[in-house]
Length: 260
Image: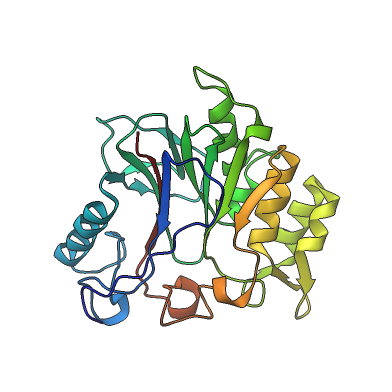
């Protein structure tokens, strides 16, 4: 792929003008082989110089510093400030400061971007099934939404909106009985987010599970990934990285920031 052929997904949502967001694809960049071309993950075995070159290009494109985390499929989120280093262990980030991008890397898990209607704060969450499920009903989305309530100027969930980026789709994401049972035990209506597969297996709809959790939190305005084929990382090899499809894979990034 040519280094200059970038392809950015720009959310189509009614965020205020001060809020900017984008999601990278695999198009463009320095990486080659299994990581071709715009791999942003330093932890996946790619040549570090290639990854750092891609990260520099991302920062040049968005015009602010993206803060990369060591994502561990948990529920902790960071509050970003200019001194926050890359590599801290967390699966989400939030900030009310301009000039810093909350950034989550994905290769099948679901990136969720959040902001309030006035653009006072932004947040990003890395939502695989473990992060969505969390512990005792509190997952990464609950933690991210709570960061808005805990701000100096608290914002009610009804004032928030969310955008869901590309992830493994409901035709490709197979889980076992135990995963489905745990989701359904916490909320019986989550059963609608699973279709039966082979004996003991289910096809899980990650975007539907995220929408279900966001709705339960009072967030009615949710945009982006609707579970359609075009959003599926596993089903679109030329556009998206997918760990489940390839085993060795690069990472894309979804970013959100305040421009002022």
